[in-house]
Length: 191
Image 1 (cartoon, helix red, strand yellow):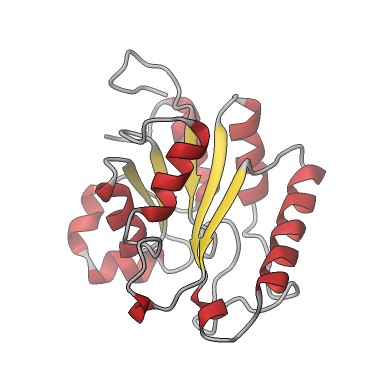
Image 2 (tube, helix red, strand yellow):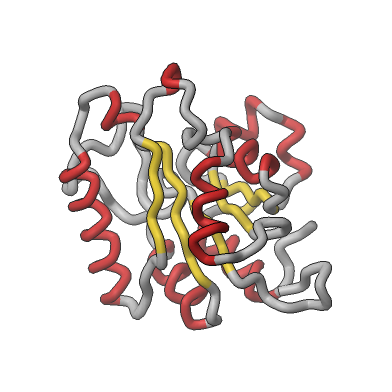
């Protein structure tokens, strides 16, 4: 992909989870059975892996703080993700999540930058210009807070986000994760 550093591919791509990798629900994804991948998303992650790009997930999971499910259930969802990815030749290098409710005032709940900063530290990768693919204003805010490059998908809450934030239409916007990854790997993901 083209970047300001002479055209090299990014060393890292950060993804939101619900609405980007898997189907989302206004009632939260509360069980392993409710965790259903969006068609093409797993193969898209595998394409990033095969291109030598690290893949990390940064996800708000306030269902834990709300008592809707526990960390054990979340871990089981992520095990299902990794197993499904392995079947298509892919993997996620790190999954970080915020378990707090919006009123907790933590530094990790997007749009706060805490999860992204932890990912940057874990992989020793400067976050400036790193693509962060999400479907919400919180994802865009977190990306901007660390000078990462927000990309929006229309899947999940993406259409609602674009309707509520018309200025976001100026960002690179894609139908889904598969389309965003195709564009990234082709060097055509916009500025």
